[in-house]
Length: 179
Image 1 (cartoon, rainbow, N blue to C red):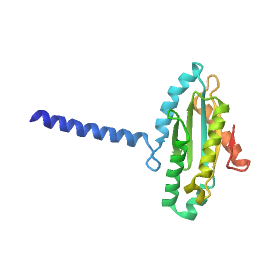
Image 2 (cartoon, helix red, strand yellow):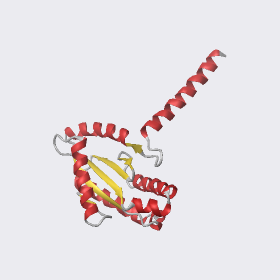
Image 3 (spheres, rainbow, N blue to C red):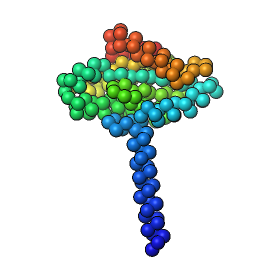
Image 4 (cartoon, rainbow, N blue to C red):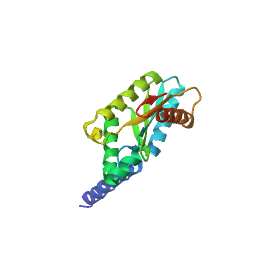
């Protein structure tokens, strides 16, 4: 009897630990990984890149999201974010990671991917968002900035280059991919 009770308590604890881990590593609105988890995993991939493997980073930002929010309200905007997350994830390989970094900004890690392939993946994500039946009702588009690991890079350096490329995409008309 005591063994059964102890086993039941351990199972409850295990379930709660798994739930807490999920809460700590995922974004509540989209179900994607959060920036804390992303940075940690990106650190591991940086170590692989230092040994000669490719690594690319993409930053995606929803164009005119404030307008969507103001026009349709927060609940609909949250549903739009969730749908964007789903479309982005479906556009990627199983070992790529997409995370919500806050607001309407997403970071995508593409291990073993050079910048040319990363640009193609980004273009696919952009088109999938543009052509999605649900998102097209709201005329949702995204802009994407792409960068690739260079020798002795840190997460900060790679993300600064991707952010500059994203800014270039925004400045040159949005709904595009820039490197």
